[in-house]
Length: 153
Image (cartoon, rainbow, N blue to C red):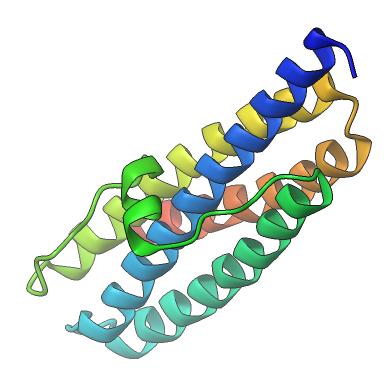
């Protein structure tokens, strides 16, 4: 393996591990909002947040397996997730439903940027499988943004 190949491979697995951290953080925030949403749209939002959280949780395993298939190790702890995630914590259990929706939409936009970064790193490393999967993952995140922002319209 050449130094350039090693560098692109390291960049890819670093990008995937940051993406994994973002996925875990977004999953937990989405579940938090699922548990704490209230108001006239409670039922619909409770179910939507749960559906979106399940989709994101599935993504965590897929991303982690891409890291392992590329010969690297994945994140191993909550501390590792916290250190790498670009998704901010939200500890306020009393946010309005509208603020929850807006925050999840913005966080999913952050995730889309992370997905595009991982796709570019995969392309540079010649990892066609990750590059192709990133398109599907991006489409799912874009759909979450669409659903959430449509609720705010």
